[in-house]
Image: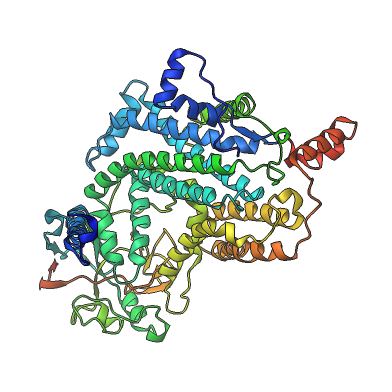
Length: 186
Length: 434
């Protein structure tokens, strides 16, 4: 048959559209595994929980454990540090939320909400600056809490951001006291 | 310039045979021998050739280093030490590669500032300029990932901070960061993918360099007067004139490079990178490689929230914005005159900008506390004001000096003054020296 006999839309149009759509879907299906392989793999995702013996920590002492590749600080705070933390006016805080994975997301950042009920002396948090991921130094900076040497973020004795470029308080991970001297993180 | 008319005539039978089948010799001859360049190009114009040399040198040393390097977080640091101590000439190759990166950036910064000074980005060279900006971005990505490979403390924490930029993006930030890292923190998967990409990107740079040179050869080179080539007397042949000048520039550059490689190999590095990466301890004072310091200072300068944008996202936006400015330069500059030689006010602001960029670099190397923060904020303000205020406004209000009618006239005029017992006059305009 000659080209002039062909009606619109014809079989060829159908083939064009079908081929085009198959190409788009196919390209997407092929692209996805290339992106997907970049994501954290199964061994990384395996949520390890860590148990920590904190019996040796007297007030004013901290220890750091590695959890999900990041350091988690466990600190038994001094009376003075707790007082400083409680005395803070919440209106002064850069980040008003507790960022405590054990509490609802909208819990206010009071000193108590940064800790566990009945265990207010204990701070357990991911010791990673919420700015760009450096490890802040403990018991340094203006507020006697943490100070990030990378870009100068300052945290108070409850790990709440008080100055510098960091936007959020340091995260309190899911944890529980499984006994008076043992904490399970994760 | 004179596109589409080739003066290549093969002299041998093999030459004619080749030319009829694949005219590669003709392309080389037309591009690097007969290609006409403005006769007044100064040594600032030799950095394009120097950059090509450095890219080749980095690829050569890099490919060799990859034969001895192990991209595994438990082996990487030791394998680099093995290159330094055990591999024959390994110390030399590694120092050439690490200092080569620094000198690559020295050359690219001079190249970029030269473009800004002589208005090389103005029509019809916008695309040429943007291709250059893309090369610069690729260079930054390559340099950053290369610095992670030795797996020292600065490698690890530099990677943590820079991938942390992406977590500032609202909603999808954490997902993107995990995609880059392959985990929740910098670890072995991060090192592996960075090694793979560090090997790939230089070849992409080489590809964009080809486009950059192609675009250059379509529109022709700019020159210190900023006046387009008008006649044959305005140009000289690439070979021997530009070839020899470029070669001499390379030689001087390589002398300085060699001095660093042999006498100051770690001057531009950081001692903390000779400490193996420790995910539980950030060095007291973390800094990126020197060539990122101005941008690092801009990142840290934003310590305050701007409306709904928090300080973290603000800092990241300012930092990426400072690089994005370069892409917009062809349209931000409203002046009809290209070269700063004939723009007294732009010349002043250009040098203030150079000082500002160096100041930002110095501030980036200082701790982020006290008066340094305020100084960085002021310097950041000037950085953006140069692009967003000075470039558009100066072009409208500035009265340029009288332009010569042609490149030839500019050269002859200068020779008349310079050669005839007026040395002081010649020294007053050193930037037009041919």
